[in-house]
Length: 398
Image (cartoon, rainbow, N blue to C red):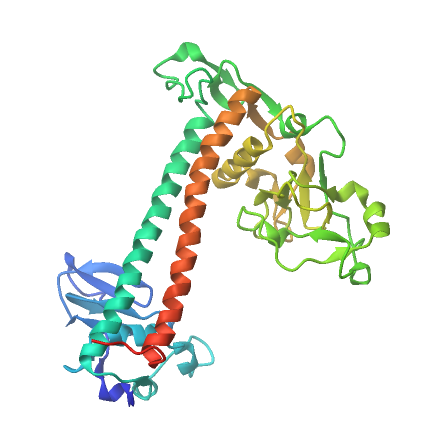
């Protein structure tokens, strides 16, 4: 049995908050979530908030006293409706379809009241809400773990690139202020005595082709694309600082060898050279077949004298700190200057210390990756449960 929203609850308008007295107790909600606090309440939960104007597809579940601004509706459910069950129904509905504006998205109460939901008796509603809330709790725990590890990595990256690791103890060196005799001044600031400062080109290789970009101009055209052969490595594969290949395009052997300067092999660093994500980079998996760079990429091949993963982490650190922005032009669209990248200076510990630094950072990266995989799995589970439980496809017993 389906019921319209007008049979499930009442919609209340929000109000402007700018004249409210300040306070720390009552949250002020807009379409994006909490936007401040006040000492006055306009409504009290449990309730569902949904956008009237702007971000209209972001329902929010609230409890306790709150103030909702005039761009977001408050929906108070009737007594026979579980508030959390109603919230999950909103979450499972594409509210963008209710948009009736040509400019800023907006929804009116008549459209909301016409929404239809598959109705269950309240005990079943509660059971459905309980199941979905359990999944939400796991999602929140997983997201918190990811945030924790990312913060740990940020602090660790600062430490290993300024203090390094004592290869005899496997521990971070004491800080420069605690043991100044272990450090020296350099173009990069204080660094351990054993380190040197060299260019990325020197770190990579003496080869002229250790750092190159993809074919210039229109050397790769649609007429060169094949369904098999040598894969074309595109910048979109590394925009998340991981190599995640989507659908490949290929070139044949003849075209590959005509552009051999831009060839890339497993173990090379691939960097997005042009666009909003320029500077993001990842290592091409070691077992990846030889390929050719697209024009929006560059590669860095590192000899065995140095650790390619150490360099990858340095580049990630430089991008996060905005150092790569210094060699990025913005006249048309952002673009890394390969000539400037080659001479950019980086720290160079011994290979043994590089290995230890890379190992520590890889360990925390693996923890982040494991939690992100779990998060994706739980998100997929929740999406399936929303559809199955709220439509009645899977019956819930109480």
